[in-house]
Length: 356
Ligand code: HEC
Ligand code: HEC
Image 1 (tube, helix red, strand yellow):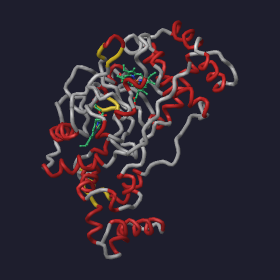
Image 2 (cartoon, rainbow, N blue to C red):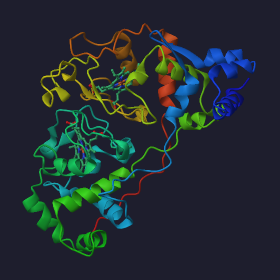
Image 3 (tube, rainbow, N blue to C red):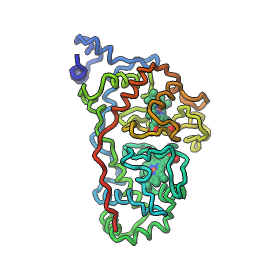
Image 4 (cartoon, helix red, strand yellow):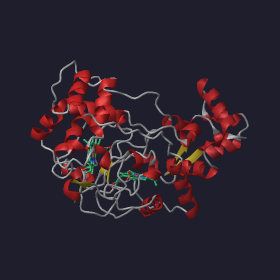
């Protein structure tokens, strides 16, 4: 029996408040076997798991900064404008580039004066749902984050004292600020941050084959990818941290990568499990986002899976959810195949005509 029909059966049963046993009762024993996977000593029923991966229908905007088209236009112009940097050659898009799944494809970011940064540039995809930002979680909102890179010596190296008058001299910017902020042409750091955050919230990964499968199209992903999804939720234990439709718990873990960066530990020096802990990245469009990890130390998804299979280095801070997985070669390929189904083909982003 095709899974599509089976899913319909499950939906019908769930609507009636029925249990998994009721589905098996309909004579689909293979489905019961297919949907029950083992994680540790727990049996997970994919019927219950799948709805947790459903995409939301709309983007959440905070009450303090609701969406308006004028803020979005301004935010997009600022995001792509290298004049926000001291050198006039670095914009947000230099390191968070739409063609590179909103990252930069490098192991470490490269900032002002071709200075190599300490960490990899993460994607900004799906930030609208983010609960905490940066690898170490030092910002709570996109608004708080936005001015950081502009004024950071290592990144765009632009002091506010220089930036605000520079933008005020650009006539079209004055008009755009006025349109976005109640007719006032005054330019402030806060308004810049508000506009950029509005634009960033609309950077969302599109519908991927995985979503079509979750929505009931049995043929949207391969049999290998379906096995990979079971492993992800079962034996491979990825879901312990990469949960929800974005595939992140917005929390921090030490996964056993061997470097001197203590990550979240700098904020929480007394909590052992936060040493070497970094924010769990979402996994949307992940096969376009290498190299991987906060330090870019793993080049391919196959290397990432090898890392988890071996569980990295043993130290007191390493998460208890990280342990040797003993995956077979086939299981590793299935997991990778599954990860590939999380990539969406999004319409190309049109660059803006910069304000004059
Ligand atoms: C020179 C490269 C570079 C530039 C330019 C840059 N960033 Fe980043 N960005 C990074 C790096 C590296 C990090 C992670 C740093 C860390 O966690 O310590 C980061 C983190 C972020 C994050 C957090 C993402 C997350 O999920 O936690 C956001 C959002 C972001 N940048 C937005 C911006 C915006 C907006 C601009 C322009 C105003 C910008 N960045 C300019 C390199 C850059
Ligand atoms: C204990 C929580 C946890 C578990 C379990 C876990 N991850 Fe992760 N994952 C993380 C964290 C935290 C990072 C970032 C680590 C870092 O950069 O230091 C990460 C990074 C990644 C990345 C790189 C993302 C990027 O943008 O660089 C991939 C891919 C990934 N994990 C896939 C998996 C897969 C596949 C599994 C199951 C085999 C898995 N993870 C299990 C927490 C976890």
